[in-house]
Every structure is written in structure tokens, then in C-alpha cells.
Length: 267
Ligand code: 2AM
Ligand code: CA
Ligand code: CA
Image (tube, rainbow, N blue to C red; front, side, top):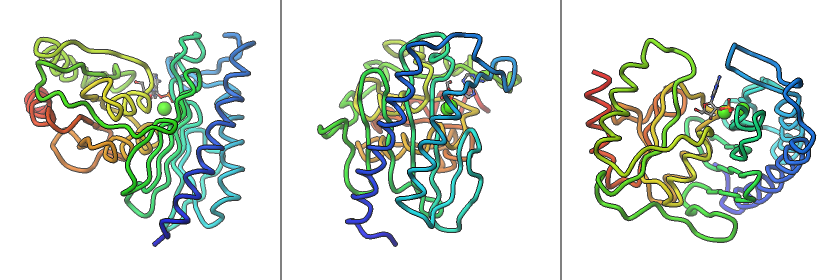
């Protein structure tokens, strides 16, 4: 067990590190051009900015908690530890970044065994730093955040991410989306799962769902949602949402309504 005092200190340091990586990303964006993009798959983009930002983060984090291992998108350090692991996406929203759409962030979580105990999501252009530690509430910059008070799907705005591979499930996804579009205020696609989750946490949208995401896309954001009073599950209502590649996060009140649509579509 880590003490509350130590966790608080780690949370402060992690915010500093996320902001430092964010400042690097912001600087590089000013002279970024599309020639510098590499492809991991036909639509899976990466650049030196992702890898360099990750190096900054991993290097600094290993100084503040030397016993922790790493799960990171770009694989800077692949050492896993038994108890503590950092789960890092140095640049969530890379497709936005390379095209100059200003929604992207740095996402860092700390897991103690199966549980996320600290999460930081730094939105690089809006300078919004979302953060939470287990049992300590959720914040954006210095302000406490809470999920929306909306009671029904019919009064809700829903964020999602479009599938980018595993297209054999796309019909199920589109069926769920169609049904949500018909019964809510509408759907939004911001292009960063970590930002989507923070928007649920801060009450800007009431729900978010996506399939195919990785642990580093969602780990930090899920704790921020839960600490803001929201609910996170997989599409069966269970807790396999960090490594399970299905995530539904809501303000809690509309969770069952969306879950019913997802269960029908995924049946
Ligand atoms: P990324 O920007 O780090 O790749 C958007 O739906 C979410 O899916 C983002 O969090 C994005 O993270 C993730 N994602 C992973 N691979 C992707 C891809 N090939 N294309 C688009 N989004 C991808
Ligand atoms: Ca990501
Ligand atoms: Ca990324």
C-alpha cells in the first residue's frame, strides 16, 4: 500500500511531468509538417513527437517511483513490475495532432496491481489538466469537477470514437450509435479517448463509449470519471474496461439506458 501523502506527492509530480511533455508537443506542433508522419498501419499514425514525448515522461517518472514498471504506447520501456506500473499514452489524439486539429493530450496513470490509483490527463492546447487519485475526488486545474446531473439519455450528449480497425464489428457499433443518436441530444467524436473521458468527468458530455481501445488510452481517464462521481464498465456491465477493449463511461444516471442499447447491438 502506498500512503496518501506519497500518492499526493506523486500526483503533483505527475502533473508537472505531463505539462512538461505537453509543452514539448505544443512547441513541436508549431513547425510540424505531414512529411514527418510514420505509419504503424495504414491509418495508425505516429511521429517523432509521440516517441520523444514518451521518452521525457518515462525518464522523469522512473525518478519519482523507481520500483514501478511501464505499459506505454510507444514502448520506450517495457519492464513490468508486480505491484506498480505506469500506463502512458504520451500523445492521445495523434491523428488530430498531425492534421492540426487542436484536440490532443498527454495521459498518464499509475496502477497498483489491477487498480488505477492515480490519473493525469493534460489537454495540451486548452491547458486543462485533469487529475485524480483514488478516493480523493477529481479536478481540472484547481477546480473540483463532477459528472453531469442529467437524469435521462433524452437530455444527454454522447461522445464516441469511430472504429479504426477490427471492422467486422462495425455493424454492431453503428447499430448502437444509431439508437443513441435517435434518443439523445446527439453524438460527438473528438478523436482522443482520454479527452472524451475527461469530458464525461467534467459534465460536458453525459456518456462515452468505444471499442478497441488500449489500456493507455483509457486508464487515467477512467479513474477521473469515477472520482467525479461517474460510472465505468465494459459492454456487459462488468469491470473489464482497461484491458478488455470495450468501454462505457457515464454520469451514472444514464448508464443502464446506454448499456441496454449496447447489449442489444452487441448480442
Ligand atoms: P491515439 O491518438 O493515441 O492513436 C480515438 O478513437 C482513440 O483511438 C484515440 O484515443 C486514439 O489514440 C485511439 N487510436 C488508436 N489507434 C488509432 C488509429 N489507428 N486511428 C485512430 N485512433 C486510434
Ligand atoms: Ca491513444
Ligand atoms: Ca498515442
